[in-house]
Length: 291
Image 1 (cartoon, rainbow, N blue to C red):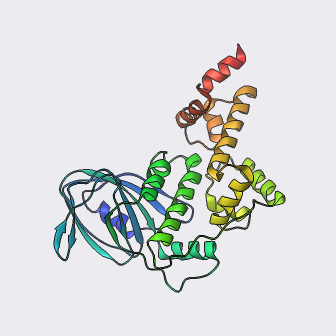
Image 2 (cartoon, rainbow, N blue to C red):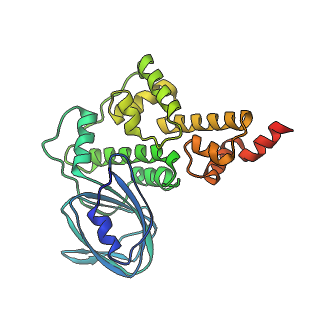
Image 3 (tube, helix red, strand yellow):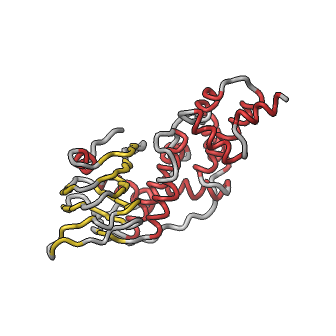
């Protein structure tokens, strides 16, 4: 489902330069930007969570008391729906946005807590710091190529964790996360694993896997890890690499075809991931099998 986000469209009408963008299965969008010497006013019908990646020290926010700065790497801003903010950007910096709707948050809250909040109100946060937000952005969202299908499970998982964190710490709900005890039932786990094996070439997301188990993303991720000792994205990548190694050793398929069958858009990205795991390029493993 493709959704047009007003903050995204508005930045494209200014000096901001889009570095990368991806919409995940539920319509949640990530966008990486660079901007300089610009003045932007944002008012949107959705939520925007922004993290400064590089620089940002000379980014100014308009307040009732006048212009205030405070940006810099790993500072974040949370702009709730229908809030208005004006920015004066006086030097170049880079930042990444996550766009989601109130419907996304409400659905997530219903899945996690099994009850529907009467309303969700997010706090506006400007030039703030939160180690958890920084970790999720930098370790998961900024460390992989967004255009690679093989990374979409990681992206969707991290986005869900970010939104869960917002509900817990930057909304009026302040609900504690429910305890999750025990893993998946053996039959459910076998079905999910079979689905993964059949769809290693596809762009899997956390929502798809949770659907196979008839669970919320929150409960599925935790119960799957309890059963396998691996997060869903770690397990799927492990299975992709295992299939790749099998094809390299026992088939004559070209590397590009093996990459596609294992969920990678390009042989170069596949080779990089394979080498990081095995310490050698796929072509080197194939040559070693022949000699």
